[in-house]
Amino acid sequence: QVQLVESGGGLVQAGGSLRLSCAASGRTFSSYAMGWFRQVPGKERESVATISRTGATTYYADPVRGRFTISRDNAKNTVYLQMNRLKPEDTAVYYCAARAAYGLGLGVRDYDYWGQGTQVTVSS
Image 1 (cartoon, one colour):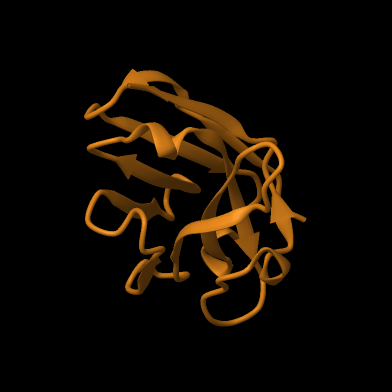
Image 2 (tube, rainbow, N blue to C red):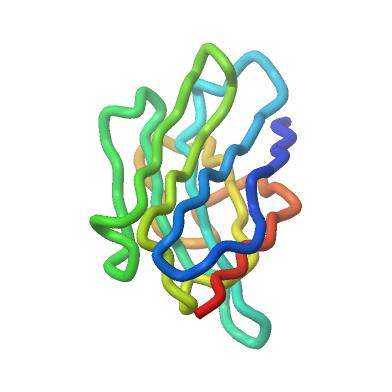
């Protein structure tokens, strides 16, 4: 069982930056691939970025590639999402998720545990 708590969301102007953090409970954080997802009301939750257990492999969705960076610190049981050059269309609730199975997961169904989400609002 893993409990995930996101933080770092807020209101930012277009072109600005935010850094999201996701703190995980438990001593087996390094056994999980981690992902960031986002959701806008009325739309399906979508993948933003994922990272392997060691951090050696990452994946980014096309809308954020080159602007967002996912990273993890296994000693601190934390995964991060650095978001630069934010756009109004990045406005959403951002969720972190943990995947127990081997390999990166790209879909919502690939993940086993979810945080409560943190709101990111980008004003134009």
